[in-house]
Length: 136
Image (cartoon, rainbow, N blue to C red; front, side):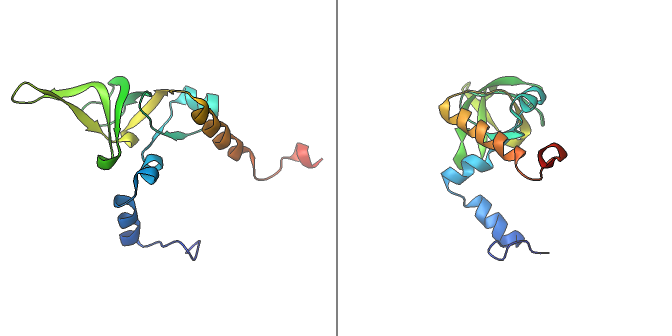
């Protein structure tokens, strides 16, 4: 059943919106899950990935590799991670693009905006139904 009259549930329109999304929306779409200990610490499940975060690759040919994010390539929906490269035939090394959903953030690059984002996301988990202690 349709939840909102203003939002389409069409697969075709959802895919078009996703693949033609502008950069500021792609930032949010290119989110990665946090590790178990970070999730427990901040009460947040995932975050938009950024340049100096440290990640571990969880899926694919390069899984279990760790490294720092060197580039977030929003145009190609990929991130580049240090030491995840391959050699071309002419000897040049090129970074391998990894999709952010296939990595897990192990260390967050913290600044004031990131801190505010974590606080905001954490606060939203507390709203909702009242507990029995609050009503008594």
